[in-house]
Image (tube, rainbow, N blue to C red; front, side):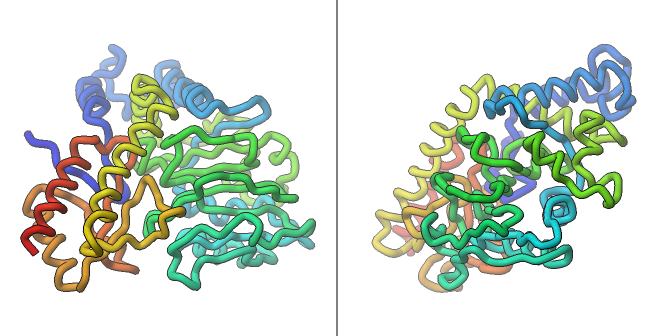
Length: 360
C-alpha cells in the first residue's frame, strides 16, 4: 500500500516503523499467546511496558528529580478541570494566558471551581501572536499561571519559556510535547494528550512536581486527585494499555532518531520547507501567525479567497494529501507536521503548493 501524506491535526501520523512493529506483535505479544490488549494490567509483561514508557519519558525529556510522570485518561480536556479542582484554592486566582481556543476552554473550566483571570490575551488579533512575557499580568495571589505552549488552530507557539512567575507555571503541551527539548524545571505541571506527538489517543501524559502534589485539595473524587495516580504508579485502575504500549513504541522511535534534539532539528527543517513557500509566494499564500510566533507544528495559511481555498483543498486531497483543512472555527488551510510526519511529505506538499500557485 502507499502511505498517505498525513497532515491531520490529531489523531495524527504515527511512525510507519512503529505501526509495523505493533502489527507483528498484535496477536502474540512477548510470547504470551495474547495481544497486549488482552493482558492483565497487573501482569509482569504489561507492567514492564508501562514502566519502560515512564522511564523513557523521563530520559527523553530530561525530567529532573522531584517530579512524577503520570499516564492518565480523559485527554487534555479533563486536565482543564482536574487542575483547578486540585490547585485552585479559595482566596487564590487561576491566571490564564489566552493564545487560542484551547486556552479559552481551560479558562472556562477553571471558572466552575474558583476565581480566575486573564493575565494576557492575543484574542484582539484573532490569535496571530504570543503575548510578550513583560506584558503578562501576574500577582502573589495567583494560584498558578497557565499557558498553552502550541496553538493548533491558529498556528502559534511559545518560542521560549522565560517567564518569571511568582506562582507555579502550568502548561498544556498537547501539540508540541517532545518536539524539542523542554526546560522541565521551569514548570510545576505539564500535561499533554498523546495523539499528536506521542502515540494514539487514549493516554494523557502528566509531569508534575512532587511538592505540588502536597498542596492538592483533599475533598475531591478519588480518580480526579493527582495523588491517587502518583501513589499507584498510574495503575490505580485499568489504564489504556494498548495506548501506553504504543506510547512506549513511539518513545523508542524518538530515542532512535536522536531524542528531543533530533526531533527539533527534524521539525525545524520541515517547517522551513513550508514557510519558505508561503514567504516567497508574493502573497499568494498568507500565513496566519506573525513570524516571531510561528508554530513548528501547525502551519496555518489562507489563499486570496474562500473559493481558492476550497480549490486548493480539493486538488490537494485528490493528490493524496490528507488533513489540510483548517479548523472548522477559523477555516483556511493547515498542515500539521508533528514528529512522525516525514520530511518527504513536507517536500511533496511544497512541490504541490508551488505548482498550484503557478497554475492559479
